Image (cartoon, rainbow, N blue to C red; front, side, top):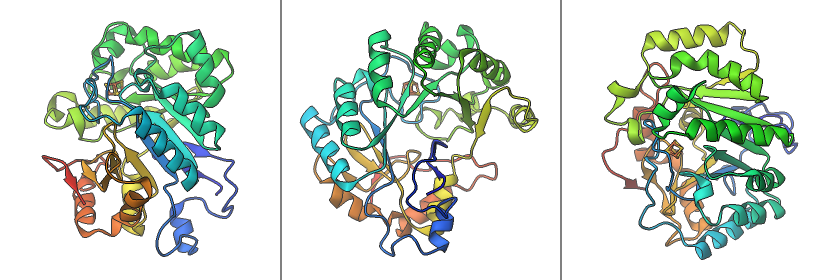
Length: 339
Ligand code: SF4
């Protein structure tokens, strides 16, 4: 596959399996996707824990405290074996703050040494030079969140003093080791006007690219949209800057709706979300689950989920989620549902 763009906009150039296709719509048109869907997800986003020292005002999965039924160490390694046997291409270890999980480093090493490409999303918390070196050894894609060019802005949005310094130190540490670091910037009304300055800081720090998008209305944004969401005027300014192509490094401005639109059009699941308590979703932005890895095997859940976008309930929810004209996704549910 020439360009496999996952939901984080990550492009894997080295997947030479299906060279002719630019995206999944091409694969589908060329009838390269089996009628029954893929044998395994291409990309698994694994929230190892919900524990996080930060409490960002926009957190899409409402992380901060540990959940009651988080997967045990034993079950996590069984799932890792299942992912390896299924030949999943890429696993992104995330959270919460994944470094708060005592299995983070062991799982990373285990998955990587069994052929799975690893990505990770970090806030910069809990890291020292030794840990940065360890992560750099195993991880292909490192994403660090930076929500402003100075502590007053970043720490406010992340709800914790000191989080700006942690993020900057982590970026410096990985860059020093020659790793490509991608920064993600969340667009809230409090920091969006500082995007240009943040990009300039990223350039100084040696960051590869900056990714941003509209927030999805889920997690902590749900019910607080008015207080958090940037105004259309602010987005206009942001887009003016992005489309002027004056940014000193690459900007990835993507729609969070891309994988939903692909799902609605083609019916196939490509992404799997595993929550810290083992629930399995088809997209991280809605509380719909196809199974529970505390009770079921990975293969059994995948069998139910791989044509999940054909499910009528999922399809109508996806249309509702994707109903905003500006590309914002909205989780319309008031409680979790299982399909
Ligand atoms: S650092 Fe990430 S996981 Fe933690 S609260 Fe912020 S957005 Fe959520």
